[in-house]
Amino acid sequence: MIRKITESDKSEYLKMADEFYSSEAVSHSIPKEYFVNAFNEAIKGSPFIELYILEQEGVAAGYAAVAVTFTTEGGGKTLWLDELYIREQFRGKGLGRSVLKYFQSDKSVKRIRLEITPDNKGAERLYKSEGFEVCEYKQMIFENV
Image (cartoon, rainbow, N blue to C red):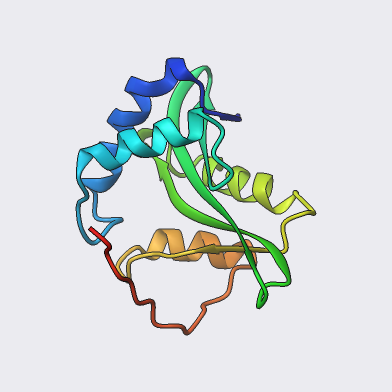
């Protein structure tokens, strides 16, 4: 099951975000305060971020963080699947695929983007099997801190 995050999910979300950023799925860590900021923005209903809890048999199995934007290139509303984390004991059971299908079923969304580290071959296989294509852009960032 996938559902929007609630206030009561805060501690579990923070644990899972820390697990995700300590894993090989990401190339660098981030300050823990960023997790709190994301949670607070999602809870207050920011139009830019949505957080979801992934549950299996009533247990928090993972989470998804989605940034909402509009792109001319994509033809409209675009979701940036910023983070998709599934705890190890729940992997390989179709949960990741069901999350992708959940977002793909929203017909108001014209494009879904995501990024993966080059070594995350399992995630790459999943995304390709769900119709995602490699985008040959080189991403550049500017940190305004």
